[in-house]
Image (tube, rainbow, N blue to C red; front, side, top):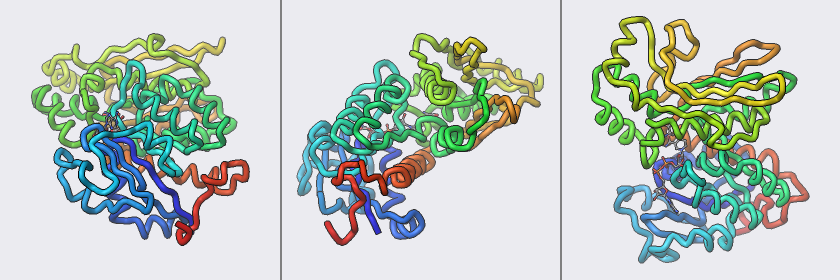
Length: 362
Ligand SMILES: NC(=O)c1ccc[n+]([C@@H]2O[C@H](COP(=O)([O-])OP(=O)(O)OC[C@H]3O[C@@H](n4cnc5c(N)ncnc54)[C@H](O)[C@@H]3O)[C@@H](O)[C@H]2O)c1
Ligand SMILES: N[C@@H](CCO)C(=O)O
């Protein structure tokens, strides 16, 4: 059985959850997926970096409280994340990028992804910044280097929206998408309906692992703005920049307004949408809407999200599932690795160093 060696960039909620999946279910996953996984490097802003090309023992790292983890003093460890050196020089097959999303310029994640692709390494990421702001250029770079660039978790966490649209909608014309695309704001709106204070509801979403490091991005709609750009660019063939997508979050809604709507049969939702016009132009926006109970997105509650695809032959197709969550998003990374395996395992044009290694060889 072959094996992929991973470099985890960022060791917060999502990459820790991936490490937990590997640590707890590694054998079952390997049997089911047909390949094994091993972590050879981890970098983190707070913990530093750790490299072991024979494979890092994940159990002791996962036993430590996230805030107390430090790689300094461990064999192969350093207090310095050494991101560029790790990404370029450590012989990993796949770089898994899960650092903070920066909605302004995508950095430093954008550089992390670029360094990895330039070094001939596959990349999977849940980070929306690089995908929304530079997805086209990064896909071109990946194609030039013969490696994979996968980012299913950038929209609706592990719910397979992007891959479903790419693989299953052949022959359909998609004229628009509309969705609830942020788990935190949807969870917060539900808690406001129940009478919880805004700050308390945000704190709950942070505790549950749904919120961005700075939850302003969730509440003010910037996270949805990036996801609308990804959907429009990937599925509607657009090339939107951030300034093309009007954005209003939920902070303008008062808790009273949110509760009062329920008594009128309405539910406030933060809705992102993109519509393609006959001339090929695409309009996109993020705005809170009071949806009537019969609207397909009105019943989507808590951290669950949903996307409605408007198509010519099927009418509206709606996919819903987890929009946020550490394990749910780690699953997206697993699905990305599986996609890389399916596309590249037999690819003779891939650099030989990237061919899946036989477990006994290393
Ligand atoms: N949590 C979710 O539900 C979810 C869902 C989909 C996508 N995402 C995205 O996935 C990414 C990770 O999410 P998370 O919940 O794990 O976030 P997190 O804040 O828990 O973890 C991010 C980690 O990255 C580290 N980091 C930040 N900058 C770094 C740098 N320059 N070098 C090395 N490490 C760095 C931080 O120290 C932190 O440990 C984010 O971009 C987020 O937007 C998260
Ligand atoms: N903070 C984001 C994570 C998923 O991208 C959300 O709440 O939807």
